[in-house]
Length: 310
Length: 140
Image (cartoon, rainbow over all chains, first blue to last red; front, side):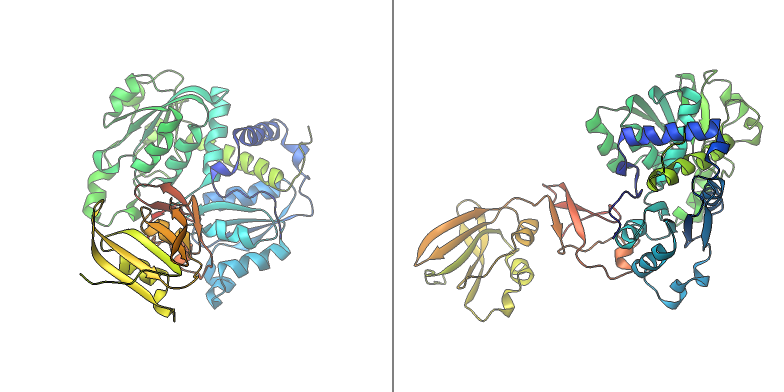
């Protein structure tokens, strides 16, 4: 049985290990050709039990750009799951073919379960509303790229703070870095859950809560992390419609922000960022997608034990 | 007042919060024992006002984890030849395996049969534990 590292949640890696992955990702960005064959002869199994375009493409492309091959499915009805195979058995079987497994599943804890039965590293590509650690790595690489280092930053997090798993992961992970301050911007109904605040409070993290996006922008944010209000999290359609347009980032609001503030978003967006903002050089959310691929390349190499070629 | 004779050999589970006695009786599977077991409810107590109490006339190996999750304030006394030989005070364990089940309907453990799920202690006072798979909080 494989006893090495998996990535199930951001806390599986120390800050040093995260910094090593970010540093490797930067090397790959600088000279991608040098890494074009490092995974030659290796196979990544991409098991997507629920729909995803961005994350699946990102992992598949990452492995292909490292010279490896990809197998898998994006429709569980075409896999043995449809015949009633358990996740544990799928992990045992697939890890006989593949060198590394990437899994997305609607049930929380599935990646952890797979990691207990697989003979190879397992990467969690999203398990329901629980964790999405490679989005966090993507966010960190984006921040490092634009802010040089992850410290002394005032980070505004805006939108659906109650249900947004990428936001919870990012906030708890950023809290492990030096001198990070948060401004949580949301309507009352979508406030940051108590358990996230309880996790960061003992670390001495400063945070404020507001429903005033304009004021937060004026107060000098270094990063504004926007998020989508997710229709699927609401029982009442009426409630969703009432809250979805609560915060919309426009050109006028961007004018209030610092000249070097960056706007991030895990995508897809609905209407929380007006398209007129896309042309602002501070809007980096589409660049974030590219960083996601590079950081996944670095992660795959790290978990497969492949040394940096530089 | 009902009189229950003094135990010669066995275990006394004392200072059980009033009303918790039957739960402990069930969780420890005491109904399956062939030995003498006495569950006393609503017993007068100087400290607690009212309490429950269980006496077991056997060498049963108790699962302290189960007991401490249900009612961490209880005391366990082992008796041999009518003498108290050992007294144990409980504290909630840092983690428990194979006792709790996850109450989160979205957790994979509620879709697949998984043995020996581990839960880690989050809040000793509220007896809250987090599932190792989904991190959802649960208690017994």
